[in-house]
Amino acid sequence: MARMYARRKGKSGSDKVVRNKVPEWQEMGKKEIIAKVIELRKDDHKKPEIGLILRDSYGVPSIKLSTGKKLQTILEENDIKEDYPEDLMNLFKKAIHLRKHLVDNKKDNHNKRSLQLTESKIRRLGKYYMKEHLLPEKWKYKPAEVELLLR
Image 1: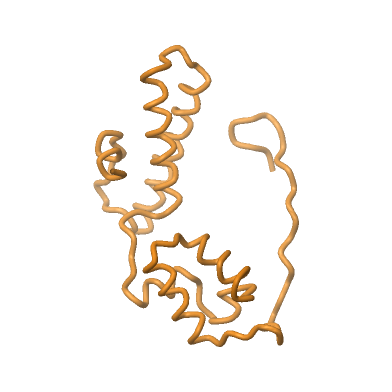
Image 2: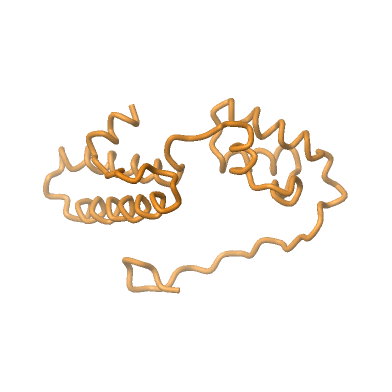
């Protein structure tokens, strides 16, 4: 499939190993994994970091395969909820960083375009999350409010 804003195709990546059952060499049980996920999230680790830590340090290749639930589901069941989805927060940070850069470098047209594309992604994701009821229905992207949110 082609890239959205570039006229070229994307690079292919490696495929994940197909597993239907928990490997025999995995030492942690279902309850231990859930407890470790909650502990890592309370230590302010983000969801991708939790997956990497469990994979690299504890030998858990797949949280979903081991527990039967996604990481997000485990966190929601234990009343650990985020205000904004993580991918949206990352786009917020990128947009704020680009805005600060453009204050000093007004003629940087490449980054002006990058800011436009990033804010377009934020608005599209916002529409999606409003449909999924993860954001309020009247939510609107306002750079000044987002900057205050990130501080």
